[in-house]
Length: 279
Image 1 (cartoon, one colour):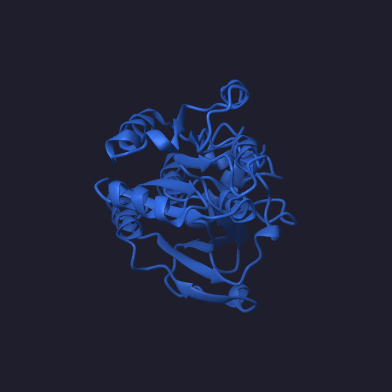
Image 2 (cartoon, helix red, strand yellow):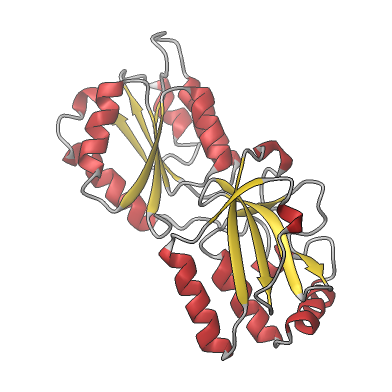
């Protein structure tokens, strides 16, 4: 699922959702659905999407325009998500407003008679999209070291893991690229902290590509204890081929073992983390 593009469907018509899902099943995509504004806002806050298909009117009230609030929140998150808007009515005022909100396509539901009517805009949008994975930060390392001078922080890692600066960049980019955008704990000055007793680095982040909180440790020994996890319910993230490939890639390029552990944290509140990546 981590190498798939992600689509959010925001639609209160369950039959139309099924119609979308049936056509989109031909694409290699990961799909979430929401039937209300509040549910959609929560999903967007938790996870980044390559494309959102948003119904303007999410209630039976013909004056309702709550879908526009969803569009505004997508733009607030600054992920560069592509947006397709659908509407049951032809309102001459709405399209003009929408195209000021970074809308790619405006679909009239009555004109959607076959899958091709929405698949063409979807595939075009997915081909064009390039997510903003780093917020306003120049690099992964600049965000992870936030609160410290980047060079000082990298020196700590070099000393503890006994590897070069280039190797540090390689490790962190390989580990974090599938997780981006990532958000740090609000109370934490940095994402990744040093444990000088164990030659390890660890941290808790929210991955918006996965929509989940994670605990990550990187160490030169395979005997790292998980005492910092004692306050969490956690489960090891070992089933994903992406992270197995990362371990192999790191070992191949460093010619030595660096021990990587990634754990999913259960029941960790999203409110504990930053809203967006901000350097």
